[in-house]
Amino acid sequence: MPNIMPSTTAPLAAATVEWPPAAPATVAAELPPVTTMLKRGLRGRCPVCGTGKLFNGFLRVVDRCRDCGTELGQVRADDAPPYFTIVIVGHVVIPLMLWLERAQTPPLWVHSAIFLPLTVGLALALIRPIKGATLGGMLKLGLITPPELEHDDAPRSHA
Image (cartoon, rainbow, N blue to C red; front, side):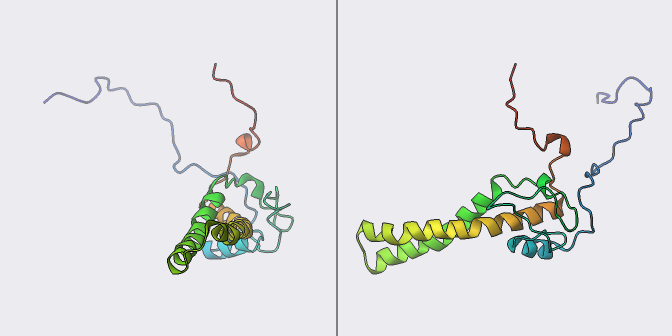
């Protein structure tokens, strides 16, 4: 059997690696249970304290909670809330469309008149609470953008 050990007997460099890496200190208080954070996010409140507002506008997240100081701007939900919204709205609208088609067989304009506004309305009504709950879950899991990468919107060259 061949020897798979390295031929040198010199000790490896004494580099200590801490796993998992320490998360940046972005939370000013102890985190509540995940269900509490999800519910607070659904209501548009800070997932940590429950009193500060989560949004500054329709979907723009505040940089920092005005009550507890949690850096909410470092939690980047990106595409998750739209995906969750599409899944939920699709599971509501498509069965209704299929039921109507099987029960009445209406013309296409009736489907359009009913289900286009319903789809848009449901999506607009759900996107904000879903984004809040997603931010709460991500904050609990420690999925936070490091400060040095937070506002890195500059185009990158591949030279």
